[in-house]
Image (cartoon, rainbow, N blue to C red):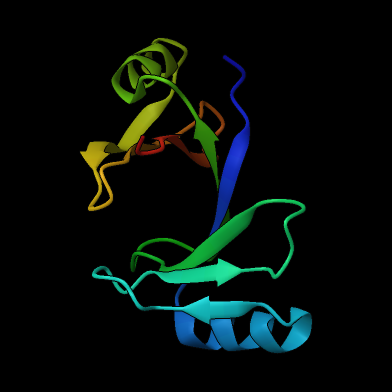
Length: 118
């Protein structure tokens, strides 16, 4: 299986302002209509990937994070740790039955591995 980038996430200390900025600039629609309050972005195009906006933790700067599709989140986390990655959020089941984990690569870049619900 290939491991495509499936989604992007913008982490922002001011997520509502960030959503407003990108909505006006690019015409993206942003919806927080979900149980977690996640601001889901629809770019209005079938080309490229879709994304979302999430509040950045107090200790973090604003940043963009990529979600890479994997078949097995736990196995991918284990392999990433063997290669020097650090786990920030361990494998976690989401309300839609997908699963994800967030890590720092050996250089400190945040990324997520994600298994989409079937």
